[in-house]
Length: 378
Ligand code: B12
Ligand code: SF4
Ligand code: SF4
Image (cartoon, rainbow, N blue to C red; front, side):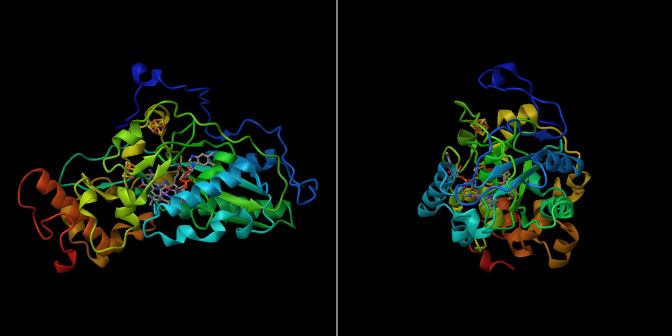
């Protein structure tokens, strides 16, 4: 069932401006052309409006344009924020987050001048199970792998662009390169980086995947999106592990999503295990509590994002004993393949142990203590 709520008391504190009931949102302000001081700005052979129309035609739910501006305050601020995050060790074992290319879009593509930023809504109106014997998989992983789904659409947009501009230089990414997807999406006017660390759109909440095409074109940019969390702190309070260290700053060391998806260690730290509450692949708590999501989430039009039935209420005991063959059958073309069979077993056993301890009973199967020696288990 949809968790969408229309509680006027809850919503009163928020400034929900201009809900536009359209399938695609184009960013509003196309009047500020930012010219780069380092390169001349030739007339682009194609307009931003034409590109947006094509993106809409291809089924993207949001599209906007950002311009790279060497030495801009926005890029410098983002670089500084990323460096502070890294200096605090908030990347945990994700060493690849320190790739120097992530610091400068021109290191990714020296001729990059404009980014076409896109969003795809993936929300489907299903609830997470509350059965303690069942594992919780976060929404992003329920259906077909978003890298494939968005990658295919980006390729189609890229092919079309090349057909329009034979001299085009371009690269497409969907969480597949050292590019800060959220930062560029905010610059392109798609939404804002919210206190829960996700980009929220006015039209779909934060249930959107982000991607972008870097181009050498001088396209008319959109205005960066303003922030609309206001005084709300619900996500910070709801996070069971205190992972939102400051507004918009997520410490991966304390984040359930990190530990269930990215952490390759044999054990999950005890402080995380005791707060798993069934989560075995990602975590949606800080998005589920967000009033923007409760008010504006709408079912996706992308058939590929409909959940595989086996992802909605997987039995923890099955996952705790998952074999390689079962893993292959369960997660075809799925982003959840990033979690290898041994890690599924680790996550499910930890969740079982935590729920057994919460219920004050001896946990079934191996791994009786949170973060006890998984290497000792069969
Ligand atoms: C690393 C990473 C993670 C890490 C760290 C999360 C995080 N928030 O950084 C972990 C593994 C925990 C994670 C989890 C999830 N992720 Co993730 N992740 C990424 C990745 C690869 C990089 C994000 C990043 O750069 N983080 C580093 C920090 C430094 O950057 P930042 O988030 O932009 O935050 C900084 C700014 O906000 C800045 N800041 C704060 N205030 C201000 C003010 C100004 C003026 C400026 C300039 C900056 C600034 O300070 C912050 C840190 O210091 C992106 C893909 C990509 N290539 O971008 C996906 C991505 C962010 N993840 C995504 C998803 C879906 C998730 C999950 C929801 C999955 C799930 N359900 O479990 C969770 C959400 C957890 C959360 N609360 O954020 C989506 C988010 C889509 C969206 N609508 O935002 C992305 C964009 C992938 C995609 N292409 O769709 N993720
Ligand atoms: S994903 Fe879960 S653990 Fe991570 S910050 Fe959000 S609520 Fe906290
Ligand atoms: S729940 Fe978090 S992300 Fe959502 S509006 Fe409140 S502060 Fe912003």
